[in-house]
Amino acid sequence: MAPDADLLMGAPTNPVWGDARPLFDGAAGETLHVGVIDVGSNSVRFVVFDGAARSPAYFYNEKIMCALGAGLSETGRLNPKGRVRAMDALCRFAALARGMGLETMMAVATAAVREAEDGPAFVEEVERKTGLRLQVIPGDEEARLSAQGVLLGWPGSYGLVCDIGGASMELADLANGRVGRRVTSPLGGLKLQEVKGGPKALTKHITDAVARLHEQMDRETGMRLFLVGGSWRAIARVDMDRRQWPLTVLHEYRMTPAAVAATRAHIEGADLNADRKRLGISEDRMALVPVAVQVLDELCRVFRPKDIAISSYGIREGMLYERMPSTLRERDPLLEACRFQESRDARLPGFGRVLFNFVLPLFPGADWQRRRIIEAACLLHDVNWRAHPDYRAETCVDAATRANLGGIKHEERVYLGLALLYRYSSRREGTRFDRLFRLLSDADAREAEVLGRAMRLGAMLWLGAHDAPGAFRWRPEKGTLTLTVEARARPLFGEVAKARLDALAQAMGAVAKVAFTDD
Image: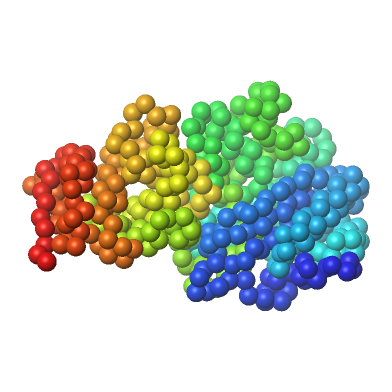
């Protein structure tokens, strides 16, 4: 073992495989930097998580395509060139981890190392050269961790998680936020490329394998299908391009079975080299897309999902989720991320919650899903104050629509961005976001405007992080919006605040009234 191996913690800290060293500060909801290395059949990735524990940011994220599993079906051994590349990558990642001073490191290897006859020798070599102890996990554990990664982004999820790699593909059932039955199969992209007998033989191989998976899972149709893995994300990128989708964040991108069929037809007739260059997809990854989309199309045909959601969270995030106490798992990842950002960047941390309670009476029909987006907007209403005033509104839209957030759909990102635009600007016309805003219905766009204008007014009435400036009374049947201002806040309610109240009332189709409480 290398003499500096103890800096990498030796054995992983996952309670399933190693010591249960605590990662999370339950009071603050934060954790130190946590490193995860995932040695897959196609790529080797190093991620360092940081920030709010329930919705961590990516402090560092690097991937190297090694194709360890290429040729495994024929030789039974790791790809020699891939093995050299993987070892070089792991030496690099170990050096980076030491340089970052990481105190916690988890490292796993999946199907290729698991199945190769020289897998154990590779694991020993890795430990000798880097100090990293790779934990080679079985297929059902790989499926479970991938499903837990989905739960990191979607607590309480239900449906079917499908994680495709180079040498295997795993399925896991989710119900009530828990992982149920899980199975593994040899439907990895690299293995599929090695099927003999031409297109007909490949089609039969995929059809038979998916049929067996359906029988093993014994799963009803009409559920949501969560897709985890680089090949699925590449297909989603092609689908976005085909549809001219204005938002390119892959996480929570939705497709339908019909869209998958259309994208498969597009891929079969496209110049994939031109597509990959335009879309920024690596050559190694794009080479797997034609077989992966055939598998996905067959999954849709057999399992008949109601919709398909891309998850950027997988096994690495699942390893982090594994270490969370149940109280932390139950928190909303979106709101946790927004609270963390408010505590770090807002001028008056804590006022976001006050602002949420202030504006909430304007949305009496909001369900729990909409309420959490409204709360997220209030928590983020002041985190971009350092931006230049001329670009502050645009910065807010960019931050909301491009941030690494879990638990939020694309349309909700746009709603959040539009509300924050109106927090700093009285108009949206002529911005570079017109195509983006067209993802919203007229009703949602109007509601986002109301929220933004209400936050714009509330921001003028700051009394302190925990002091409410007053209260709204919205009477839709009479078309009146009454703002009762606390006596302490009366000096803050000047002509600009009055103009913002009138603008809010106009957006609601209401008449504004003002009342002041007694001292």
